[in-house]
Image (tube, rainbow, N blue to C red; front, top):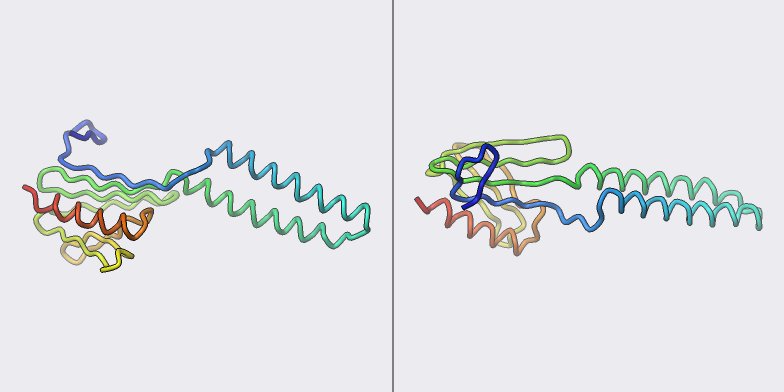
Length: 154
């Protein structure tokens, strides 16, 4: 049996998280290393060969890389959680600072999935929330089958 916030028993809990191959400190180390090497090479070429136009390009390259690493750090803790408890289905999506929560009646909830698994959503009474953003198509299709089975179980 799974436990969720509040320590109330839940029949079913599915949590999908991003795959984070580097910790926050690992990302900082990788960025610092790349920054040092890139700016070192640019500075060396600038001083030795007089190729000063390399410096602004290296600076722009590092600024773009910084923005990419910052985006990765902000979204490292993103997750989606689907909880089925009695007649209630709760979907909670955390993306960066944005939190979306939708509750629906289990009897009316329907799984909507594209044939190729490219899109998965839960729908009830005209409201729909997309789930499985962090999964590949095959995993999304498996999740759709599993969710449909759990919604039918009473």
